[in-house]
Image 1 (cartoon, one colour):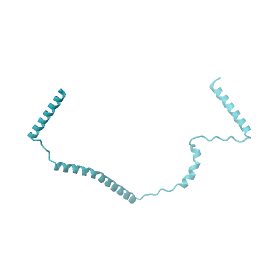
Image 2 (cartoon, one colour):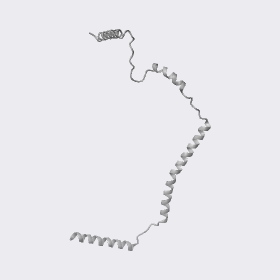
Image 3 (tube, rainbow, N blue to C red):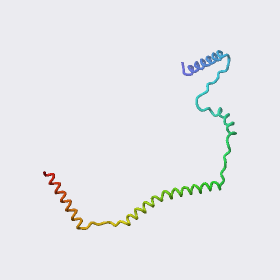
Image 4 (cartoon, helix red, strand yellow):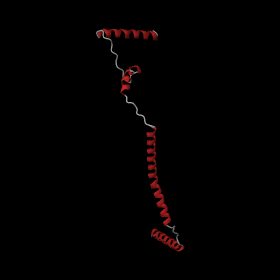
Length: 132
């Protein structure tokens, strides 16, 4: 038995079963089951005809109106940019003024000598404490 013969016998059985179902359902035509998912285009073609009439017309914006909106947006952006830049400038200016007020301090030779002596004294005390 070949594949084509098997398919032919299956088709024949399907046809017989459909006839038997039609007889059992009092001759009423078989109702097609509603399939899951999006309907095909031909079925959906009927519905958009109703929706098109209900759709609102789009309002058009004049060139002057578009220009006013663009200018207002640019004005807002400029204000935001200025507000964001202002704190940075203030911080930089504050740092410059502090730097200008304070002079760099230098250590005198006498001060260096005192620090060196204090460090040596500290090291000697630490070594003495470890030796005990």
